[in-house]
Figure 1 (tube, rainbow, N blue to C red):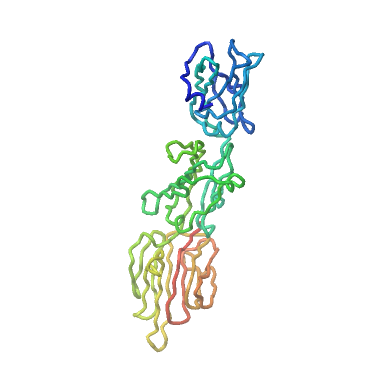
Figure 2 (figure 1 turned 30 degrees about the vertical axis):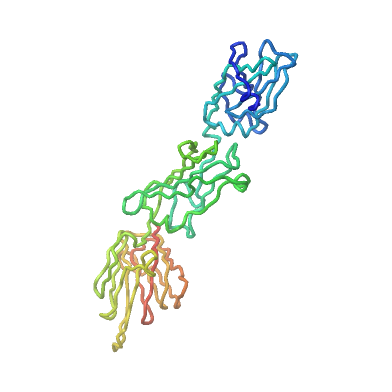
Length: 383
């Protein structure tokens, strides 16, 4: 049809009224009404002839099969759902052309409103590890699993923006662009979207802050986020009683000294005067850890080394990752009453998880059996 229109000079005529979309009363279309077969565009004009060639343009697409006029004065075009999908959330033009030996006549224009898909028909993105609108970072490792169900009218070539927004421990803005103009393929049509938020990124979030996960979809396959439609937003509260040591300076202390962090005080309470406790990056590119160095200096009798993690509140569970020497671990309440203890052998190169579950936990005391060094990573605190 476009070849015909380009070769002739069409004229617009009020005797050829605008087309009508059966599924769009008042010229406003719910795009889901055209799923899965498409929508029906009716062409009716009083002077229709059997010899007329009638072509349709829907949102600029004029490649539909040309139809002959009908004795009944009406012809109907089926517009596939793919064309409807490209127009979601837009006002588009629908027009037909009548070709006769004496020229081409254009109808009046239908300005068709293609409504956005109703919010209650669209999926909200989810983080699998969240429960009752809370993402508790102390309850899982391995990152957060994001899922988005396949939405109505999903199609290959649509563009997607998936963004995680929150607040970092130091109060600054946190934004992670999980998908940035990602192009939908057949896999997403079958299974929806699935990806993982790295644990190291989640551990940067501030306790009790709001975390939002947004998804925007370009139904018209535009590369511009400005043209995308917003889906319902996932809003979560972050529970992050989590000491990662990320926002405190690299520092060391020796016997009798301590290091202060937002959730606890780290103290070296007994041992050699050469022993130190440090907050370091090990290796240098990694997140910060407690590096606990203890030496006996051939003292006689040998020095008994002990480090304390003095919590600033009481907790029901405390856990952390441990690399290093065989050690005794003891848990106390705020009155220094022993709640429980456990012993673990030397560990390396992979860490083990040390965990205490006792109501009123306030102090963890660590006694290494031998000289050397040990590392503590990421202390998780659960009330």
